[in-house]
Structure formats: C-alpha cells, structure tokens
Amino acid sequence: MIEAKGAVMNGQESAEDPRPGGEQTPPRKKTRKRALIAAAVVAAAAIGGAGYAATASSSTSATASAAAASSASSASAPAQAGSGGESGSGSNARSGPAEGGTTGTVTAVSGSGFTVTTATGQTATVTGTSTTSYLNGTTPASSSAVTVGQPVLVLGTVNSTAITASQVVVQPPGSGSTPSTASQVVPFQQGAQSAAKQSGQVPADYTEGSGTIVSGSTADKATEAALAAYPGAVVDRVVQLSDGEYEVHYIGVNWPHHVFVTADFTVAGAD
Image 1 (cartoon, rainbow, N blue to C red):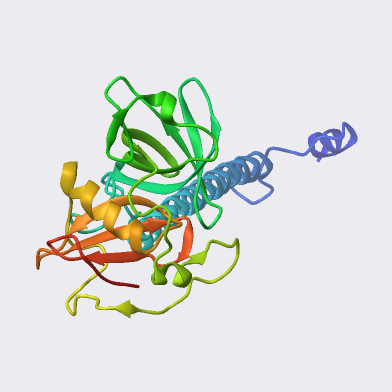
Image 2 (cartoon, helix red, strand yellow):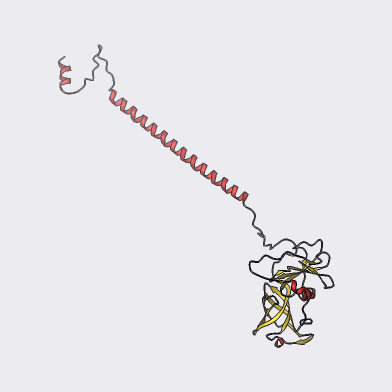
C-alpha cells in the first residue's frame, strides 16, 4: 500500500496490474497511436491511388475523345476540288492559255503592241513578237500598219484579255459591214445575269466541257468565222466536238458564250 500511494503521489500510473497474481499488460496508449498512424498511411495511399487512377482515366478518356473527333472530322470533310492539279473535267478543261483572238478598233499603240476595243466595249491588250505576221487587208505589212482608229482582227494565244499575237490583220475583209447577228450580242455588264437563249443550230448531243482544244490554222479559221458573225467578244479557246464541229468559247460578253462552227467553218448557231 505504501508503494502504490507513492506512485500516485508522483503522478505516474503503476505499471503493475492490480489484479491478483501481479501480471503486467503492455501500455495501451502507444499501441493505439501506432495503429492510428498505420491506418492514416493506408488511407493516404488509397486516396493517392484513387486520385492517380481518376487522373489517368480522365486523360485516357480525353485522348480517346480527341482521336474520335479527329477521325470523324476527317471522314466527314469533303475532298477539295482539283486537289490533283486538275482545273475541270473532260479533255476541254483549261489548264492554261489557248489559241483564239478578237476583233475591234485600235485605241492605243505602244512599243510592244497595242490595245484593241471590241464592238461591245471590251478591251484587250495585244503584244507582238518577232514571229507576229501583219496584213493590211490581204497585203503583207509591218507593225507600223497598226495605228489608232484602225479596225483589226487579232489571232494568237489568249490568256484572259491578254493576247500574244501570231497574226494581226488591219482592215480585215468585211470590216466595213455589220452582220445581222451582231445585234444579238449582249455586252458584258457587272452583276447582270447572263442571257439564257439559243440562236441557230446547237449540236443535239453537246455537253459543255466536252471536246478537245485545237490550235493552229484550225483555231484561227473557227475564231475568225465566229467573230465575223458575233463580234464584240474575246475568244479564249476553240474546241473540236465529237461530231467534227467546233465550239468557239467567248468571254467579255453576257451572250453568246459559245458559237458553233461547222467542219467547213460556217457558223451554225450560238448559245
């Protein structure tokens, strides 16, 4: 009893078991503290693992979603037209300048060529080269025959309204007369709809874009025939159709767009 009281007076718990027999038990506070620490470590590990799993799952899901979206976008995007360098369908697809020409009046002359204005007011810039031939009517001439105010027929390689002349005819035959069909030509007007009409005979099986572009004297004869009947435009190509006729393609006017010339270079119709 004296020892027990001494322990209490010193503020210390007795390590002795008060039960009979004097058996001792281990301190409980340290055991509980260790258990709590161990539980906390396990919980922290579990939470960290769950967070990593959630992050990995979210990242994987986002990556999969992005891949799916990219795949869907690629699948639904239309192929770009002309991606292979093509400029149209059929053998008549234009990929560059072609032979044609125009008629009109010379409105300016320069050292390298001249400007011609058509009957509808369209202008074209003509450039001469060392191989350009000149005629005054049917008589051989030089570039000096080209003067302001003179009517001309220009044949050559056309790129829009720029013409590299192979032949220039001053005072071409028939330049003093106006064909009856000339009044049907509709001048170009910005914003105006093109006229939808047909004159004469158009090949029954004609499909725009069909045929083969021609050059040389064949293109020259077809161009000259078309411009004589329907003046005022620039011819930027001549196409031979499957039946042997020619489609002469016009630019710079609202009508006609195509003039059809027979195999013997007679104008048959226009549209």
